Length: 417
Image (cartoon, rainbow, N blue to C red):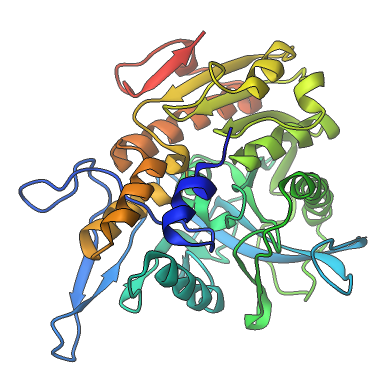
């Protein structure tokens, strides 16, 4: 499938891997239909009449308190193909996990400070609207909180974002999985993501690499991360700078129960990584075409395809081919009234921005095409529920029967046969 984020969003908004769009309708009371987290506009002390816009993500639905930590990894066995002169491949990953407490911890920002500064400038240029008074979200996770101890560890899920997109864009989905007992690992694919923040305030920008080459690099990144997780689980610290890791992390990963999902090319990455690495037992693709040899070979393990309202086997030959070669459990779902970027944090954040900022009409129109018209609360709730049901079934052996057929609780999900 064409990447709508590149075709329509950037046609109106530039080239910074934009994550902001619009969805919903303004009601008479001034709120956006769909009930996205309410944007907060706080008065300043300068008498300018302008306030700070504070964006928010929907709260996780799970019962567990969550923690997060970031880890800087260096793969010295590979050269980064996007740098000159060539240097070892560097990655930033984040771990999201059930936490045993939060005493002395702060809530983690959506992006680290140095990356936030750069990204705010990128988005402001793209939207042609000043972003100086906009604060990106604070997550619901506690920075470096101790990990909740579980006898055999927590099932592990990897997340890969869309092309030219940051790992932070999956936060709304990732936090919810962690709050339900999973340890989720999000991966930034350096020099493809628009901005990646490293320790010490260093920031690496995106270089718009070729997508075919990027997919190969992403799959190598995934296998490397899996190897590093094995070291981490054994009690070693893989962080390049030896930064202290949260208490209780050793032995907290049940790597015998590992899954993976991704958005757009990230879903393509999940399929390809599964074909190459049998450590990944189940995978999900959120609206990404399937490229590479896995479309021809298929998979013998469970795989979920979830698409936006304008995508599916009916118009994506790669899905038809891939589907015909799937030998394990498989299912195709479609989210009604959605766009390609509805599966990212763009959905909740955009509704708040449209209410708070004077976006140019042409930008709003292009972004609306990308996000669809479904309310953010309905979209996020449905995505969370079906992703969790899939991984619960195939990593934990828990069948809540949500995947058996349409649910009146989530009427926006269509089962495709």
